Length: 304
Image 1 (tube, rainbow, N blue to C red):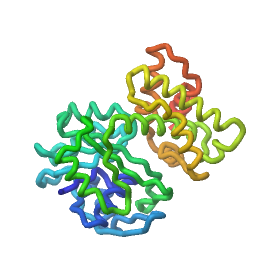
Image 2: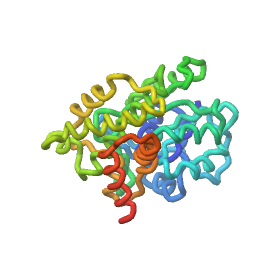
Image 3: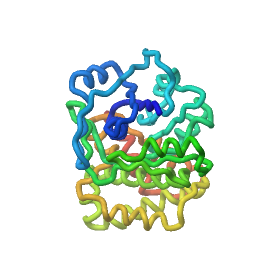
Image 4: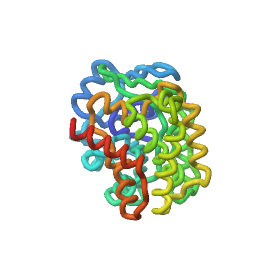
């Protein structure tokens, strides 16, 4: 299958690079500045799972090539509309679009733009960033990409995609309940990004200082209450499971939103926490910690 990765950043560069390492047909859709950087220095991945450097195939939005079989949509939510226009010329009748964005609202946007039949479910768990040289730095044990049909069926196309995704140095997992998995990821990243940006610290010090664990669990419970009122298919014990995950995270683990704030970049506060704050307000749900987290993100944006 011919695979197009939207961007060659921290997420797309890593998973696209692992597929390229396996020998799959991978092309990266990038800006001209990034294209020049990759041409000069290659796609460099520095990871605890193994370092590697490639000379990748790249195209820009102005190029015209045949449509791809698969598109990995690895962009930030605030770039979604622009990115869809860039990708559109490379999407054919049978192209599969795999979104790796945080949150949940982007699914409907992608389906309305490209057609519901082309968009499958997707998410990823990874701690990764680009350094000043444009190298992909991946530092945590978890490097998982999850995908699946929203119907939960093992269709021919999803089985074919699963075959392509297997055998890499990253974890590509076919889900049989991708909607639930995406909501679980949304819950987790909302809380992790929320507490780490609020405290300006990795998860370790937050977790192990004072009433840190109780605070984290309270944020989880607030978000779960909001998500359930809008019908999110959350497991009954999801807070317990996510708290166990928090316990196992490395001391220096940072959220991607926290890293973006440290670099002075734009953030996805409205897409993640902001959406839930609005839902809570509409349904008169009391979410004091979530409100503080969101207010902190808006203050950052004002300062930026």
